[in-house]
Image (cartoon, rainbow, N blue to C red; front, side):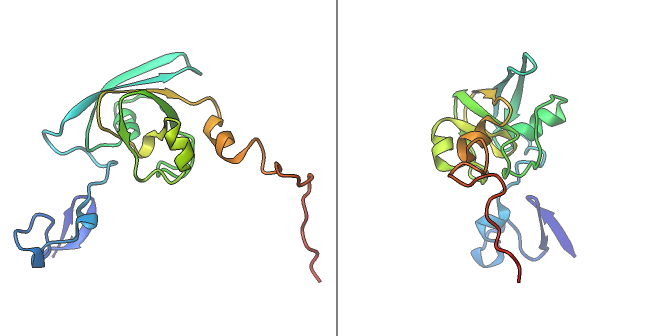
Amino acid sequence: MRTFRAGYLVPSPLRCDAPSPRRSLPRWICRRDGALPSKPGAKRFHVTVRDPAKNVVYETQVPEDRYIWWEMEEQGFDIPASCRNGCCTTCAGRVTSGEVSQDEALGLLKEIKAQGYALLCVSYPRSDVEVTLQDIDEVYCRQFGDTFEQGGVEWGGFLPEEE
């Protein structure tokens, strides 16, 4: 028999909440996936997302163990996203107040995170939060420049000829 625990399929003799360390799973396996529904009774934070492109403001309560984007999507809000895994920058926004945890945001450089940007698809609220969505490709351009051609390579670049 197999049991579904905290977002992962695990053999039933091992449990995330086992009293004995020998019978429990490593903490990283038991970590909750923020795309899943929240645990009952989880603390909730007020999240405000401003979308200047659509001139819209979205407001809702997001549980501390749920990603902001996933909760808002479930409630019918139209927040842009592409990969939904923290690898692209489509759902990026600038946190103007409050705090988020985004350990899985692989699509953001540390320097960009330090400037207050967050990927909402993998961001947990840690307080009441206000976010302003990015302009089209704002974060992407900050990280990679306006084109891949920046840096002196002329259009067409250099490709070695096959022999």
